[in-house]
Amino acid sequence: MSFKCSHMLGNAAEMLFNTASRVSDRPAVIDASAGSETSYDCLRSDTLAILAQLRRHGVAPGERVAILLPRGAASAAAYFGVLAAGAAAVPVSEALKPRQIDYILRHAGARCVLSAGRLRELLPKDIPALDVEELLNDKADHAPTGPVARTGGDLAHLIYTSGSTGMPKGVAVSHGNVWAGTSAVVDYLAINKADRIASLLPFSFDYGLNQLLCSVATGATLVVERSPVPQRIVESLFAFEVSVLPAVPPLWLQLLTSERFGAERLGRLRAMTNTGGHLPKEAVCRLRHAQPEADLILMYGLTEAFRSAYLSPRLVDAKPGSIGRAIPGAEVLVLREDGTPCAAGEVGELVHRGPTVTLGYWNDPAATAERFRPNPLHPAGMPDVERVVFSGDLVYRDAAGDHFFVGRRDSLIKSLGHRVSADEVCEALYASGEIVEAIISTEPDAIRGSAIIAHVVLDKGGDLDRLKRFAARELPRHMQPVRFEKQASLARTASGKHDPRAMAVPAE
Image (cartoon, rainbow, N blue to C red; front, side, top):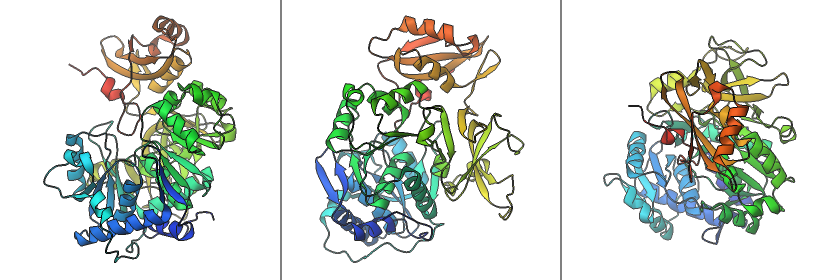
C-alpha cells in the first residue's frame, strides 16, 4: 500500500497509527547496537503510554516538549507521543554540551524534557525532566486512543540548525510540512514496506528525522546503528540487509575507507542518498564502483523547506556535480538580486516554493522576514502573500533544467580579488587521490584578502607533498591553499556535517 497524504493534513502522528493498524506485527525499529527489535504494535503502544503520561503531567496542545534520548525505538515513541498530545517536539542532539542544550530548551520555551539515564545529567535543574524508561514501564492507563486533532498549519516540531552562522535557529515545521515532505521523499525514493532504511544520523537533524518518518509512513523498517566506527556500520548494513542507505558527505567518505564496503555487494541495497553538503565527484565515482547495483541519489537539503531538490539516479554518471531538480510538488527558482529569474548558466540564489516551506524561525521575526519573503514572481492564480524561502545558496541551472551548487552567498572566499567556493577547492583536492577528507578555512591576509587553509586527512599511502604539488598544478593561484594542515580527524557538527568554523583560526 503506497503512502499518500493529499488529504491528510491533520496530526502527523496519524502516520504511525495508520501504519500500525495495517502492519502491526512488522518490525518498526531494529536496534543494531542493542540487538533488539520493536514491532509497529509495540511502537504504537509505547507512543500511547507517553501520550497518556504527557496528559497526566498537564502538557497542553501547542506547548513544546524537548526530547533528549539515544536514537532508537524509545526516541521514536517519544517523538510521536509528543505529536499525538498536540504538543510540538524539540529533538535535541545527545552530542551537544550542557550550555548548548540549555540554550535550545530556553529558546524553545520547553514545557518539559523527555530523557533517560546519563543524559538527564546534561539538563538544567529548573526544567522538568520526565524519565522515558519509567513512563514506558507504567502502561496501566492508556486512556487516550489516538492523537488529538491538529490542523496542517499547527506546529509539529522545531529543528535547531547547527548554528554555522551564529546561535542556532529553531526552524518551525508544521504538521502539513511533515505530511508533504514525507510524501515527496517516499515518492521519489519509492520507499515501501519491504525496505530496511539505515538510521545513522540524529533525529535532531531534519535528514535523520526524515528516515524515521519515511519508515513509519510506509511500514518499512528503520535499522538504527549508533556506532561512529565505519567498519561497525558496514557490518550492520550487511547483517540487517539494509536496502536504503542515507548519509552525509563526511560519513560517505569514511564508509569508503572500509575494505568490505568496497569489495562486497550489499545484496538488498537499492538506494544510497546524500544530502547535507556537496559530495565530491571522486567520491561519487567510488560509491558507484563500490555498490554498482544500487542507485545513488544526490540531493539538496534545506531545513527551512524540509527537502528541496534531487538528481535522478540515471543522470548521476553524466552529472555527478548536480543537485538535480525540485522534489515532487515543489518548485526551485534561481533569482538575481533584483528578484528576476536567471538565464541558464547564470549564477543566482536558489529560492524554494511549495507546501514544504516551513513556518519560519521560532521567536525570531527579524530572521524570518529576511529568509521567508513574498514570492517576487507573483505566479498567476497565487495570492500576493505566498511565501518562499530564500536559501542563501548560489546555484545555476543548465540548459536541461538541472541545478548545480556553487556555494553559500555569505561564505564565498574573497582571494586575490576573486570569489572562491570552498567546495570547488575541496573538489580539486579530492581528485588528487591523496586524501580521505578535507575542510577549507580562511584567515585574514593583507595581500590576498583571505588566505585559504586546507585541513586534510590523508588516505592510506597519501602524501602531503604530492598533494601540494597537485594543488599547485591543478588550481589557479587565487584558489590555491597557502597552507595545508594534516589532521587525524576533522571537526563535525552535531548532525555529522563538516564544521569549518571549528577549524578556523580566530581573528585577532
